[in-house]
Amino acid sequence: MTNTNSLSQSHKILFLNTLAFTVCFACWTLNGVLVTFLVDNGIFNWSVVQVGWLLGIPILTGSVMRLPIGILTDKFGGKYVFSLLLLTCSIPLFLLPFANSFLLFAVLSFFFGMVGTSFAVGIGYTSIWYPKEWQGRALGIFGMGNAGAAITTFIAPSLLNHFSLENPQNGWKILPVIYGVSLVVIGVAFLLFAKNKKIENNTKSISERLGSLKSARVWRFGAYYFLVFGCFVAYSQWLLPNFMNVYQTSLVMGGLFATMFSLPSGVIRAFGGYLSDKYGARKVMYWVLISSVVLSALLMIPKMEIKTTGPGVMATKKGIITSVSKENIKIGDTDFAVAQKKYAKSNNNIFPVKSSWQEVIVTENQIVKKKELLAKGVTLIKFDANMWVFLVLVVLIGISWGIGKAAVYKHIPEYFPNEIGVVGGMVGMIGGLGGFFGPIIFGYLLTATGIWSSSWIFILAFSVICLVWMHYTITKIRNEKQPVLSKVIDRK
Image 1: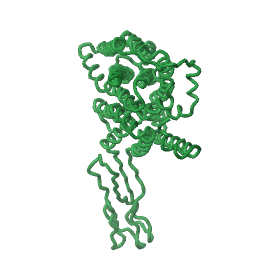
Image 2: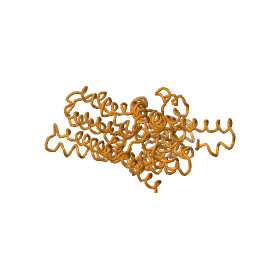
Image 3: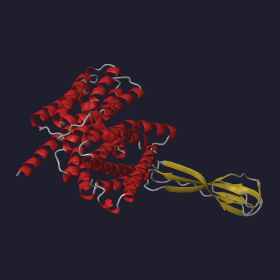
Image 4: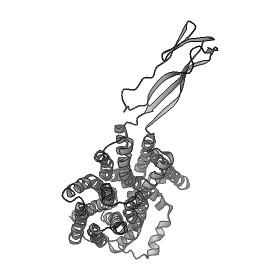
């Protein structure tokens, strides 16, 4: 009976944690929609650089501050840290409608970006309520709060349009107030219904807590999370302009496609936790990293046309050209047919399409020698990077990363049971920095190459690095320790 009551209490905390994290994640990604709306409608005349900063500042704050918030969670417990975070972050959202300059908007964005640290609180607060055999599932369910990003990208544009019908200049101000109210409601609910719990007999000093960060394992987990979470956040913002530029979709359709990437990735995280519990986090990470390599390799192939030299027409004898047309060349009484250009009927083929033709390069009455070129060959290979195939691959890699997010955090309570908040905060910080630096890296690659799919080259390279690093580490442990260790490597 005690175990049943205990599990019931754990589930209640998990529900509150997941709900709070979902709302926090929606608030964390608010600027991605709000700032774009304000600039597109001429309410603020911010430059491209200023817009970039306003998009990145909340992501940066919520990433960098995860480590200290994780330490506070270990020390004081999740109930009070989470409640304080929710209530405090509502204040800058309530003040956002009064922002009338870039500087003030940036400062308020910095402070409400703290909601991104909710992940570090929730990881520590959730894991402490569950036994080892439940850790993966519980943390996976909590991580479903990532779907908050999809809520914002899907609902916020419609709300902004609705609020602006009667008041085009000030209607947008209602949205941050709604977000602020939601934080207050959840914060009060936390204070009323949550029960505090923290790691028992944990009298370590801050320097002792931070000592675990010297472990190479922490940084390896951080690298995994940079990929599966940081790049997920980056692409949540990057896919919209990608679809609009490459496939000329509308803003609404591009937003819908971006939601199709972010929503399943967040929801599938619970399934990733289940898989990690059943098969082990290491095995799941192998699946995730291998699939990331394969899918990114397919996604990196750009929409392109390759024009090269094809088979031409050569004279089989010497003589004088007696007539020339687009379809035929005549030397004396001998005719030489010239292949004509044929246009593909569809512009959205799944596989590359090849077409070849010939272009006349000689003139009438010209003397030619045997084997001299009469018409040069041209071959055009066209790859449309079919939009629907691209979308399916994007959704699949998003699902793979969603499973990987749960697998990464399955490792932490097993290897660092007394420093979950610190290590979870550090890993979360590294992952969050991926969300900040990802679009910057993608932008530089796009500028350097002029190819939108160049961002997937980065993903491919980073996926390979993570896979090789993990495999090297596992192999090294097997060689240095006993062979039996490979069978229990997922258990401490």
